[in-house]
Image (tube, rainbow, N blue to C red; front, top):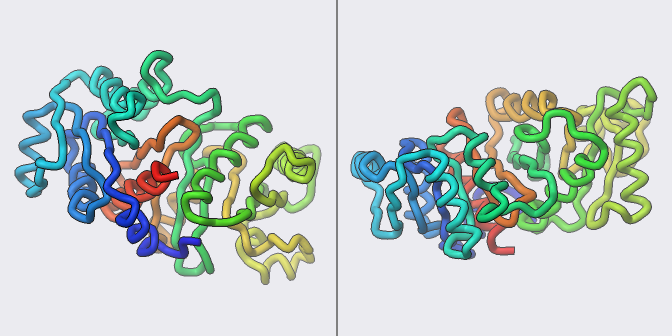
Length: 300
């Protein structure tokens, strides 16, 4: 089981280099992360986009382009499609978003002819190394599914298990988050939680243990769980937090990043290959960690 990001990077180095395909690569922050990953032997591959801009930025940050093929496509939609096609054709193993709107790169990922669709919902999984928590913590979904229904939540859980497998977490504890700990008909998140727990017990969701509903405090704190009389052995020891809506996931994601001094990485799962999709506000370290996570997933 990977316990921190130092171990994550170490394992990525051991499994690398993997070929990455960056869509619209003419972005300072993204190329800085690519530079760090390349210099550590984690990735090489393809930089697709405005070649003049890519080479200009590369020169400014001293990125050695000998490990990359630069493909000149100025149009963002065409560049995104080419970056995805490099992965679907087997020439690369990971696709990464550069200086392009998320909607454009995801449209390419879902393209029927050259895309990476599987039939499952795409979902975002963030992993955190939080100073106040005793192990790596996964949060899903903070970026993709606005108000997932029960079926989509099942798929989001199953998607997260690809990430836990890459992190060597055996039989992860998945905590379903709501505003209270009892199933209450007037609170749909708790009703879904009860249904997901039953699906896990019935074998419809396999490879993990599902518990809930949990409020956030008793999902991550045994003390809080004891005070509230919650007997579930998973309480205070979850590996994965399934959030009820994108707002809840997004607030938690940013609170951990900006208030809790957590180290983080994020990935889009549910496609045929890992999709590294970072925010411009994410730190350089977070972007590097996200690429390393993509390498681990591509190694499965």
